[in-house]
Structure formats: C-alpha cells, structure tokens
Image (cartoon, rainbow, N blue to C red):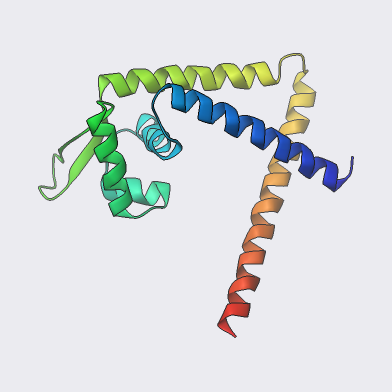
Length: 154
C-alpha cells in the first residue's frame, strides 16, 4: 500500500467519523465544542474556566460562551470554588453526567465493533501503525507551520 493509499483511507475514515459524530451530536442538541468541554469535565472532574480554556486551547471568553450554553440547557453549572473566592468551578449536572456516561459507553462499543473479527496481533500492529502515522503527521504539520512562520518573518 502506498502513502497515498494510506492518506486516502485515513481521509475517508475521517469523513465517515465526522459525519457520524455530527449526526449524533445534532440528535442530542450538542455541538463539537460543547461536547469536547463536557468530555474534559467528564474525564477530569470539575474545573475552573481558565483550566478549561487551557485544556481546549481556546480563549477564556469562548469558554464562558460554551459554559453559558451548557448551563442554559441544564448540562453543566457553575459553583463557587471552595478555596478561591474569585473563581468558580464548572460541574456537569446529573443530566450532563448521564449523557456523558451514555456517550462514553457508545465510544467504547464503537471501538470494540471496529476491531471485531481481528486478532490481538493485528489490532496491536494497526495501533502501532496508526500511532506512527499520527506522530508523523503532527511532526510534518509542525514543520510546515515553522517554515511558514519563517517565511512570514522575512
């Protein structure tokens, strides 16, 4: 298989996953950014908005907008920070937690379904190959960004 075939396959997988994700989130009245924020809270627990902005690599103002939307739909809430009077912690509500538990189970089920019929050795080889491709892509993108910045700085 050539590099082009690998890239084309990854692009096709990406399109399928993105379309499926959009359908599922739309069905639940969610967006990708709101879901990402909820995923961070689900796996990391309550957090300050500054911490959430850092985790999602967005501005604090954008986090405020996301939290406002989740609060308005009853999926998250703000509560006073127990030791910092100037800060608030963002928590998932029971409804938000229940939704994330469902989505986490669906994530696990889809992962299992994707490798159904493959032996452990094949799965391990696929994971190694995909990690390599991801690391190479991250490196190539970073390299490209550095070169672009150098050209702009001239």
